[in-house]
Image (tube, rainbow, N blue to C red):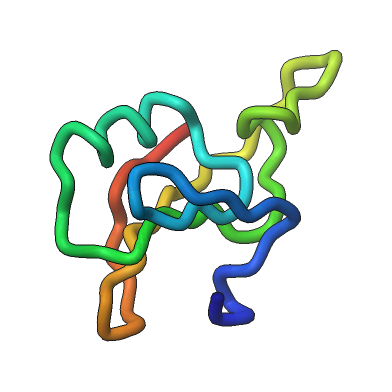
Length: 80
C-alpha cells in the first residue's frame, strides 16, 4: 500500500484490498461493479467516517479512492 494511502486498518474482500475506514456502501458498490482495480482506500482517519464518529457529530468531508492496478487512484465516492 503506498504511504499516501495508508491508514490504520487493511482488509481483503472479494479479491480487493480495503485500506482505512471505508464505508460499507462503498464496499457493496465495489463488489457489485467489480472494476479492474486493486481496491479502495480512505487515507488517514477522517472524523465521521465509519468508526470515527464523534459524540457531537462532527464530520469532515472525505473521499474513498479507487486504487488502480498501475498504482494511481481516482475518486470512487465522496462523503460529508
